[in-house]
Amino acid sequence: MNSVLPKASCMTFTLYHYWRSSCSWRVRWALFYKGLDFTPIAINLLENEQTSAEHLKKNPKGAVPALALNDQNKTVLFESSAIIEFLEETHPSPRLLPKDPLQRAHCRALTQIVNAGIQPLQNLATMKFYSEDPEKRKSWSAHWIQEGLKAYEAAVQKSAGEFSCGNELSMADLFLIPQLYNARRFDVDLTPFPSCLKIEGNALKTESCQKAHPDRFTP
Image (cartoon, rainbow, N blue to C red; front, side):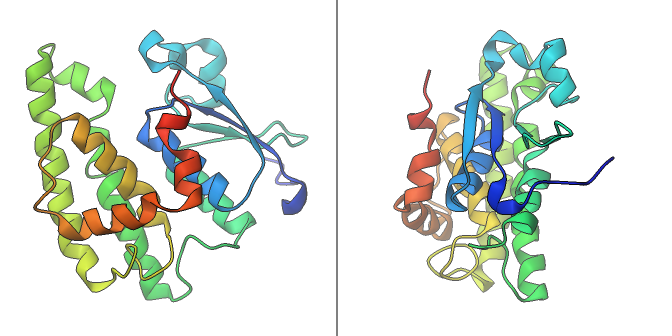
């Protein structure tokens, strides 16, 4: 792959996303937080637009998001964690990962609790494969959300300030807050997770979170 990219200050992006997708929200939030110019293009998951031949060229997994770099190679990135890491490397300010290596590792661990331990188990394809019964799907998703948030609540105790990793937004927050939004969709009781709720309250007040919120992208 030719890795010649335009200068970071000249980059523009096209984001293929779905309004209520937590993975899409993470990337929208990162783009807004870093003040990057992007054009959002909606992919309707309920209409299976993510499985079209055109979209599969952008994301072979048949999912959202996908981020086109609008460079000479027509590069398209996929998987939200990889996209956000790319944005962090190419546009390091304001940062989404702490400077200290141990703190960065902890931030990434918090991120993966959501990215690997919760979200994949509640996405549409997983629920459909598990059961055709809506109530069973809901119970399945609620269980794994609760289990994941238990781990996050315990792990965040050593790093939380206003946000998950001290008093600055980090990548971990970009993964946690959309997950709490989804938790409510499945009627998960969030009272056992006071640290998560405190972080959420602070994050929702930030301009970048408000700009990226699903309510602004509702069809």
